[in-house]
Length: 149
Image (cartoon, rainbow, N blue to C red; front, side, top):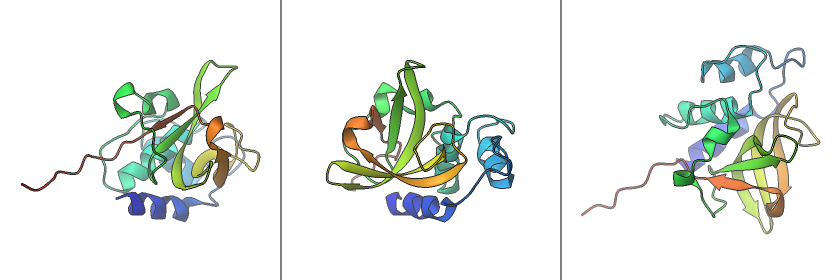
């Protein structure tokens, strides 16, 4: 499942907003996956859409803090896990992306509603490289595997 999520994310790299106002066919599909309308911030909607496309029931939220409940927090930077970026201005997690891989102290992630500079108010889907120390939280939403008896 982790490989499937990474593959789906890679297919979305390069998606851009139509007018720079959280709009466009693909962006609006991400928003619709969490019942949000055109014009809303969409990083969490993008991640939720990836999980839906992979056939997973959760997470489903357009609000990035929702994606980091204590029951889902992780320490491992596994592909398919989520990263939460904290905003000191908002005093909460304000941006989310999905881990593609770890490279030493760096996390390579796929993020929606960002840009080349890594903004939380960007214009598209990008691959970002973030130092592990800049990541506030990680979450694992993949279902537990059952061990055969």
